[in-house]
Length: 125
Image (cartoon, rainbow, N blue to C red; front, side, top):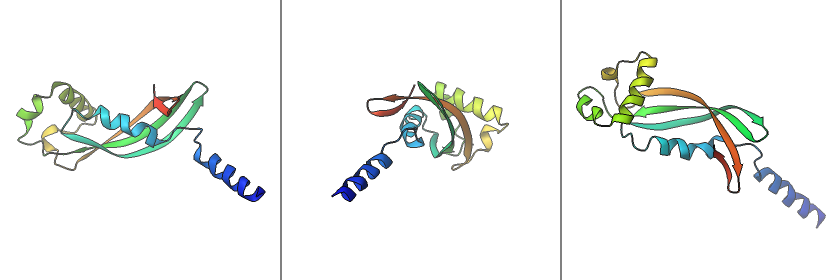
């Protein structure tokens, strides 16, 4: 009986995450790009993390995968103002010409996100 209780406690401890994982942040990242039909966030990775008592700073990377060929799509592209500006800023910073992008092209993104523990687990601050 004692062995069973020890095994159950050990399994319960393994299931409790004291640090956030990329799976805690991924839905928010996907939702953040939902209004931009040209790209889809993919290949999420947690690179590092720092526990600052009330906030856990998680360094992550992911890629934006283009869902369309941008050549010949510029008129439709300009209709999505916010999406357009964000993508243009990303591409300009990386010196990637917009019209050279083909479907499946990946743009790497890295960033730090503040995570806080809530009643339902870790969430972005």
